[in-house]
Image (cartoon, rainbow, N blue to C red; front, side, top):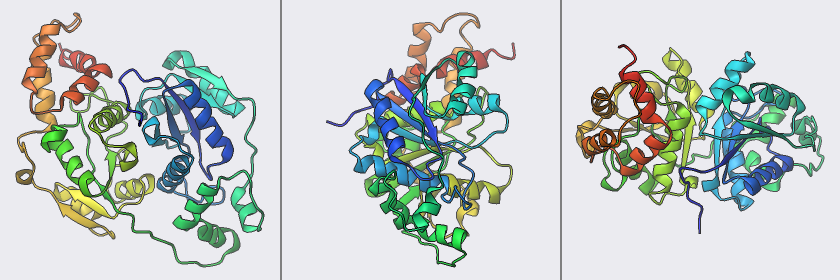
Length: 384
């Protein structure tokens, strides 16, 4: 029986470049899963690609890790893969990492430098650190692959996926200056971009955001970039990207959707259309369709090699549903409660009643558990 995410799941966190994913990385995943319910796998240096040592985009690393774990019989419902971009300031990098990932309580690493840095901020950000003594060697695996050596440290599944993605050909181009045509596998995935503050609709009713996801998942795999990844604790953007990922993942899994069918990717905003679209393409697994509910999304991806699937409000069941309506319903009830008090049960009941048919009961359950109502309670009284 497949594992289904629970609200009180324990999680460990690890971060590697995945360039390439090695047997030691796979061992670390298994080690964490021996101690925790789930593992959050960070892809480090997520904005870096097409240079020596970092040939793959974060989206390609995602596909490689995901394939390797599934071939290795790791339940996809027990892991979550999140691209993490660099930040030159260690404090901000740790803070952003916590914001962009579902909640985890222990950081695991084989790298002494990373252990020193993360343990420095562990108390401040509320997590434990565990160092694994067996260190990962610093090697240029791509150079060794091109030399014809058999690299026993790389799982066969990783080698297979890198070949399928054209990474070995790319290595030949970059290292040996041999021009090779890039490969495109035309993977059947549909992109559905949104802020999801919070995710709206009822999954089984095919309404709101979840209705769009349900329709996509009936026929295709789903890629969900979570926009405004760096924003939280604001009236229009109360939830962190990690909380939004946790909520959507919980709803989909507990609605019978296996995690192998969808990818949830936090995307920090860029204040220009072309770089933002490029970032989405870099950080996400390959997709060939884009669900577009507005002209902005059509403009972002309309000039690429993507099939644009128009989505209008009239085509969505419960077309009056919106994130703004959900937030205002919650804020209106919370404003009736005293600022310093714990939210009373009757207020929560009133909110739940006001949101009936607007958000999935699973969404409301997860929203409470990740502290979303507490954040919104604070924001409702912040200007008083």
